[in-house]
Image 1: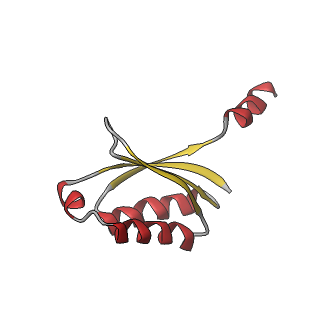
Image 2: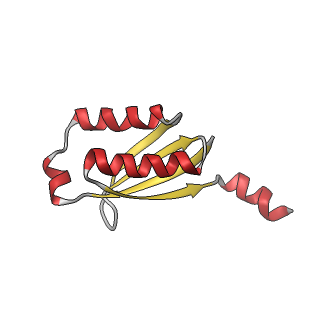
Amino acid sequence: MQTFLLMGRYSVDAVKEMSVDRTKKAVELIMELGGKVISMYALLGGYDLVLIVELPNIEAAMKASLGLSLLTGISFSSFPAVSVSEFDKIIEK
């Protein structure tokens, strides 16, 4: 499994449709793609929301990003992530 950060920006319409049910559906979508939601945070600043997820591959991440945008009206940008310990192993070689 790979870790991805899904960074979201709310549209006016997305804000109007906020609900606990929509959050549950978003988690279900990640699970349907073979993934797992590690955590979700509301933010202040350039992004309004971040989902930290594990997904099987980049294709699943792309499907998650697009699927979540369609489901929620939130515009998502996706970023692959590696832990610092993994990064240290990469740079040691």
